Amino acid sequence: MKKFLVRAVLAAFLAMSYGTFAVAGEVDVLVNKLVENGVLSPADAQIVLDDTKVAVSKELSEGKSYSVPDWAQRIKWGGDVRFRTQGDWGKSTGNGRIAEQRIRERVRGRFWLEAKVNDFTTAAARFAGGGTNPRSTNDTLDGYWQKDMVMFDQYYIRFEPSRELVKEYGKYFNDLKLWAGKFPIPFQCSELVWDSDINPTGIALQYVSPDIMTSYLPIFNLYSNIGMLWIDEQAVFNTDPLLWAYQIGAKTEPFGPLGSKVNIATTLYNFANLQNKTPAVSAGTNSRWWIGDIGGNASRNSSLLGTYKYEFNVLDLLVNIDNTRIFDFEFPYGFYGDFIYNLSCHEDNDNKGILLGGYIGKKKLKNPGDWKGRAEWRFIERNSIPDFMPDSDFYGFGTYTNATTNPNVNGLPAEGGTNGKGINLAFEYQLLKNTTLNFEYYWMKPIKSFDKRDPWNLLQIDVITKF
Image 1 (cartoon, one colour):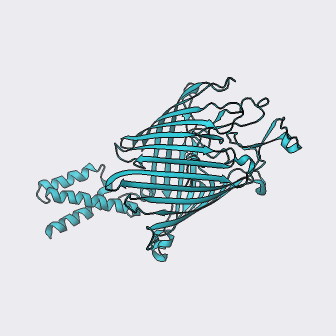
Image 2 (cartoon, rainbow, N blue to C red):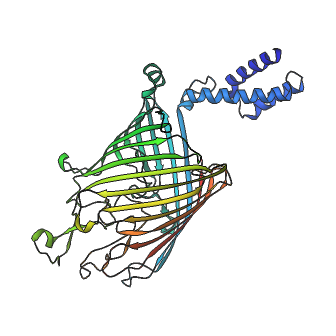
Image 3 (spheres, rainbow, N blue to C red):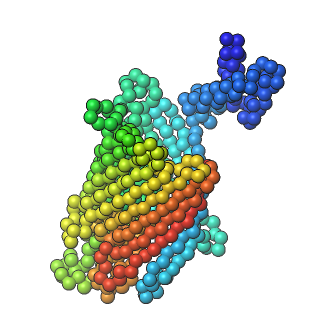
């Protein structure tokens, strides 16, 4: 009983004073002195240190630590730095615009801060390089060592129920979030629809239900994500391009002999007021109006106007299956698929996209020695999705019929465009704590092209460290 009281008093004292020490090692020195003087045994000392760390972590997570300033408990920060070697190659097009092979060294740096403003409100900002391209934060090593721009990549306010509200009104408020500003992608998605560097702007609402238990199904949750996202502002509200998005899905807890987790979602993306607009950012691979189309000349032997020919109301069906073992052997692996269909375009059936993939290894790398291998097949037709949306590393290809007036776009690769099919192979390895080595290879070819059908290749080798 005496030892228990000593340990309890010491743990409470150290928990309150932990933040006042210059380094955590000073706490160890104090406990070691108590061991040397016979007050604590080595086993009791270790228990005291463990209890102290647990108590401090709990207080910090709840914002109740008396030894750490209030502002420090409310602020989180972090970032990452990536160094990339990238090679692009394919058969030369012969027009002098695209070389047969290109090698680039590229870097990315990001830094973020998030602050708990009050019980309901969180505010955050993230800075990144890479210029204004919404689908890239890369800085290519060029320009005679000129300084690169850094700008806001994210800035948002997030509202969510306080602990007191959840405690009073129940668990149904626990996973409700309202986002406003420029924030991370709020939907379950794949790179067939969203490039991971895009940070949409507007308002989004997210909700996840409490656990649902039945006699016949594994434990699961329903979720819903809704967004009103601004694409452009043209001073007249009824013509501003907007994205209205509605998603509903279900995800399970691990179940069955494989330890499976299933996540299924369906989403409707309504790109309002995009038809007949000239996009500020685009790969140039969607169908556009020609002067001949508008004037009734079916030959189309006229110049390209450049505005979107079709609307985009895209239905998205997404499935993810993650398994943790093969019967009695721990072996993580999974499969996933995404299917998109543009309900507003039916010309030549160029309105579908498919992604099928699988992986083996840890889904998220954490410890040195963790690894993951991944393989995907992608098929994304010309008008399945606006060509400022998909993964910019997977290339689309131009498809203009008039090769005389548009010789430099027909069949040529376009970063992040549509009208492309091919494979994506990747391998990730955790070298050290918070440091990974990644290899990623793309092989891409046009779905439709009137004269140039040569494949295009891309290889990326990344070293990424996080802090």
